Image (cartoon, rainbow, N blue to C red; front, side, top):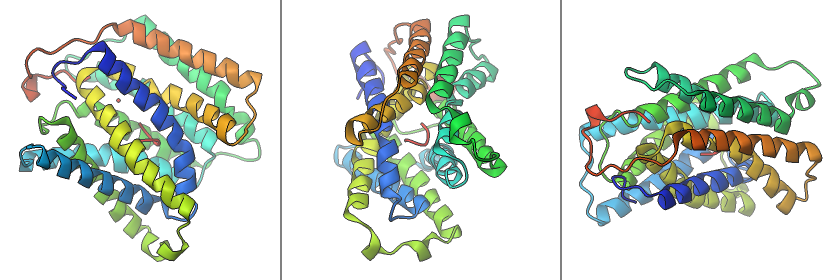
Length: 322
């Protein structure tokens, strides 16, 4: 994908990929960690995907990344994959998935705040704030945390980890356009995955996961789920996300946080025969209304005729489902 001449069609297709594919990874992650430790599963996923992207980019003629590129990739990969994805994986051991989804929905709000507070940042218009609010209300209606956690108080460590994960993902997404990275979006994505995946593996090692990993006990369904996460969740979804960060407004891109749970509910109904209630449909309508408000607030994405120097680029966001 050419990051210097985006079209509405390409942006729409990339957004659709992030909306649908990352929504489906809720199910895939749950299946994968049935017989694999979470940090090492996530680390293996991104190391494999990153290696494939790196090799493909080099084969297509992309130059080797410089030391500055690797430093940037370590920073962004650490924020997005270790801090963001890894934080949510860890937190879901201590809080319900409903509470996790609710807190992850705060990512677009952090995006708005970070972009506003940065030097020369853009002040959010009223329609953006209204869209963020509608999306948040829709998420509350969808996950109904008062029902999911009716039996006890929230685990503060889990809640704290989710808040930090959202902050890490939002800041990494915003900051990714202010650091030197390879011109090739695929090469940039590949080295970010390699760095972030290596950090996840290291975190798993510190957590004692090597002793819990027994290849003979990994089920076929978990292996297939990992393959899906590598192929679609990482190679397609994450690559589309990184490209969008280069060409589209970050608040628009962050609307995946509202749409992914709707997709997850739909897949649960289609594949697992889970009931879809009237409350679910109302929540979905509210969420999509919020997405529409945020999307129409920014209009057509600007086309860059010439590559901008990194230092002059204006910062333009996934989180657990990356």
